[in-house]
Image (cartoon, rainbow, N blue to C red):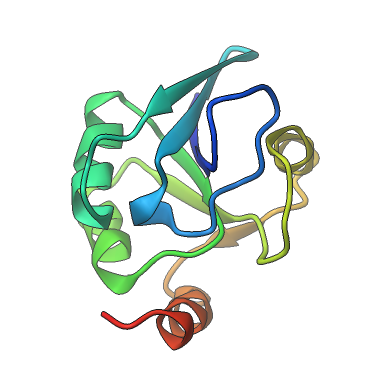
Length: 123
């Protein structure tokens, strides 16, 4: 299992970056190790392609637009989990994930997240 989490900075236990496609850094978590990698991609679609090329199969995020969500659905093989909207640190969100305390995202509940995202940002 390889997990990707958008984070605000390259440091130990960073806060999550709220905007998935514009996050400057991603924490890549695999087999208990965490590597913070710089996101050189522009926008959600390019980020999905990049994460897919790294064989990421779980994404934990706060906000996401419609286009990246549709790409994830089309590509298959990735599961989405919502971290909530409040400020949270990477270690805390990983504990919540391990304890099955994060909401799994699919067609039934993505619309609320997209509405929240688009209500704050113009596209």
